[in-house]
Amino acid sequence: MYLVAAMLLLSFPALASGQWTDLLKGGSLDAWQSVGDGLWTVMRDGTLVGQRNVIRNKPDLSWTREQYDQWMYRQAWLYTKKEFDEFDLHAECWLRWGGNSGISIRDPSRAQYAVAAPPDFRRTPAHVGYEIQIANHYPDGTPTASIYGFAKAKPGHEIDNDWNTLDLEVRRNMIRVRLNGALVAQHPGDPARPKTGPIGLQLHDQNTVALFRNIRIREIPGSP
Figure 1 (cartoon, rainbow, N blue to C red):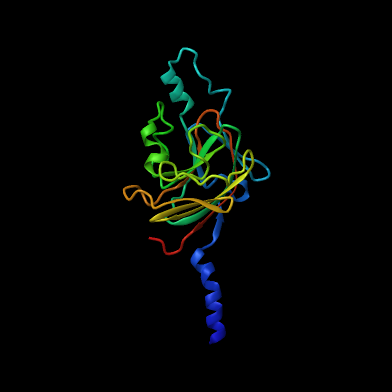
Figure 2 (cartoon, one colour):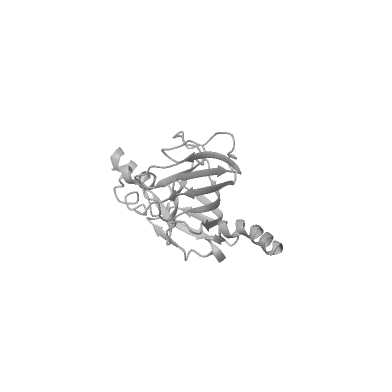
């Protein structure tokens, strides 16, 4: 009896935490859908690359500054087809200098307003759900691992011009973000915003080149 009880206690953490699922299993994008004009490919080593078609997408010299900004900052996204409630998410990311990207959670709009022409910057995923910022010296004052618009990440944990690891703990009443193992941002969120939604990867503008690898999710059993 004692042996059985001990085995149950030892197995409980694994049962409570659920199983990890590789969202890029076998280098496939079958679990994802592209929203907007991003080019998303998986390299042979399993690295996901997001970029724009710089040959096809070019500005018109006759545009006004407003038209140029609408073109430049029209976003592109890659979303999971599945929606999630409570979960843990692990992802490793790389951006070139000056780059801006992010991970969206709880955005049922699937960025439809951010990829429109012209885009509606008041209803991007960061304003509908939440965006975990990824940046490499992007000049908006929001560092990597910030919960955009809610909590700025504590400085000193990002590795410049290299791979960085993000671990998200997403619960109904709390979002926690770890950067390279350190807890750098947390916030209970806005009660009026959605509690469920897909996972999204962002190309913030026409210059963004973003790399992701080892993207895996662990759903929390028994979540509402």
